[in-house]
Image 1 (cartoon, rainbow, N blue to C red):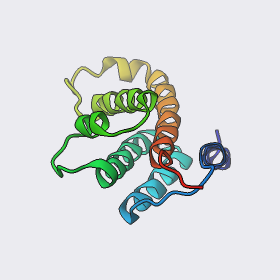
Image 2: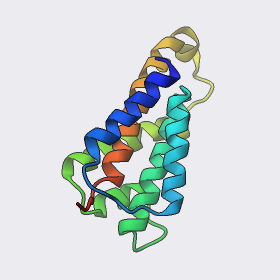
Image 3: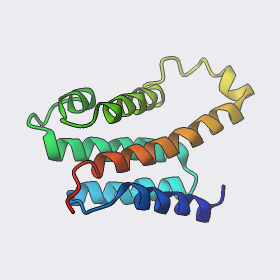
Image 4: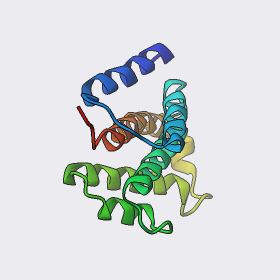
Length: 142
């Protein structure tokens, strides 16, 4: 997929999911732009990590009473749709596999089958971009 095609996917997500207006913190807005840029440039792991950061930032701004809450707790304690909660947990767990690599020396699979991981990352990067938008567009006003 080209960079232009990736930007088009982001635009389509915005057109599909944003039907009103939203107010988000400037921190979150900055992170969303960074996540979008990473996705468009094909930096899939960076897009996943940054999208998850944007989700956490938004949930913390909207619903985080305790500044030390984990992402798990922010998701669980937020009054968001249960389907979105489920998707956010899926993304959180996937992100954790990359952020907290259990055995970095057990790398033969990624050496032998890098395309498997690249395809998986590309799919999850799009999933993350959509989850980010579903989260920040959760409370729209019309």
